[in-house]
Image 1: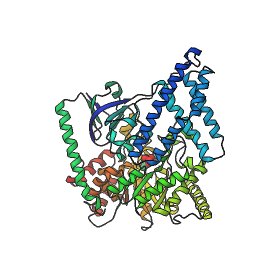
Image 2: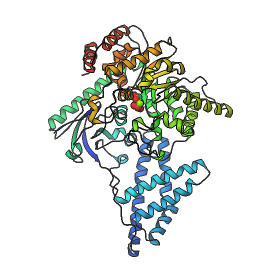
Image 3: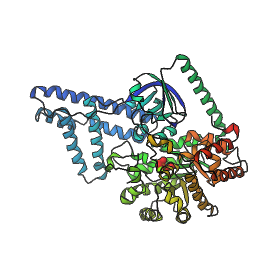
Image 4: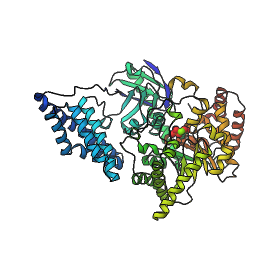
Length: 579
Ligand code: PEP
Ligand code: MG
């Protein structure tokens, strides 16, 4: 049986599937009889040991991935879970107050969290979130509905779900996820972006898939064409395996390009950088020979945990990235929280239009303490490499000024404390809201660089929700309206006479059909997911900028996205065209 969804991350995979079901939240009775008390406490004890082994597996997997920070947090949670004070409190509530296990656990956890939350010490106060996190895990184990445990997978699987959230994917081991398939989601949802970064094929918006597959069934996922197939014959499975081998060999060949300069045939250097979400991404970027990091999505450091990372923790992560990049530029984007990147502990109420709401720089300007912590961490890290700071979701010049004011305060506080940082750290903005693109000629006066966020720029220019599979056909960055805005942004940077630059870090930068166009429009820095870097480098090094300019100006004359796409497809030299 063949299913058609949205091609969200390229690649082929064949593996048994694992369905992720939403956890049911049925309520148990509040109290028990005295005779049930012993058995009820035994239930808690086995839930504790189940939760403890889950945490041990998560910590071990984090360590194996080199993620020591995460391993430390999880190990600290393990100790709290096994704390006898917690066990005694639960036991007292079951045997004396005759509370059913889930209620006893909930109350005991809340009591402990409240004690911690009332303490003076910042570090201990933040542990309240950890205690609540443990409570959630324990309750899930008690209900027997904790769902598949991704941390203890022994073989690679294809995850199938109604929705796959960015935080779930960010916490998974990429070696154990052969592909992902979800009924919802769009091409530039953050799950799709993350899947591309992790080189995991993905098909999203694949309706009906949950009902159609059973756990363990072999499934073929073709992330390049958005297809999912079940009921494969052994011959089909074998030919897919051959195709996968061919793909690996082609990738291998491209690695020869990693050490080459990214220059066009007419000798123009283009900065070809990588998009990353954590220090591991920086190592990946180095491996493919990236000229730097064009987008470090720092919000991922805030995900999959129960409290915001401290200044020290953020500093350690940013410093690690800068040191790994060894003097190459790293654009550290301040947290872009909101939209589809929800952070539960921030307690932001649900919104009718999250992508138009309380998001990114808007949160930072309304919560200056949160912003200050991050800016201080970035500045401190700037002493260890070549950092560039970037604000997301800028709509107006006033927002840049307001953000810069807090940046100045952060710098001043570090000066007073005698802490070193790069006084001349460049500051830029994401251009992803149409008003910013239209105002680029003014905005360029208050920034050092632009980075075009084509994912959001497309969504906001065309008024098409980037997550909504029902309107995904309308989501197209090749629409002439989007391209004219990109030209405005590049033009504004060009007028600075080379002092400032316009780059692009949205997914369009990783689309081979767009490379000639973007270079020709005047974009001089491209930042792409690491697996896409070498194929894009191959194109840049095989064309001339003068040809790219001809192509871009011809493309800008065309009236529709379809006309532009077919023109661009034939403008690319035949051996460079995507298959
Ligand atoms: C963009 O909008 O193009 C972008 C790069 O940012 P994000 O995808 O994280 O919103
Ligand atoms: Mg964006």
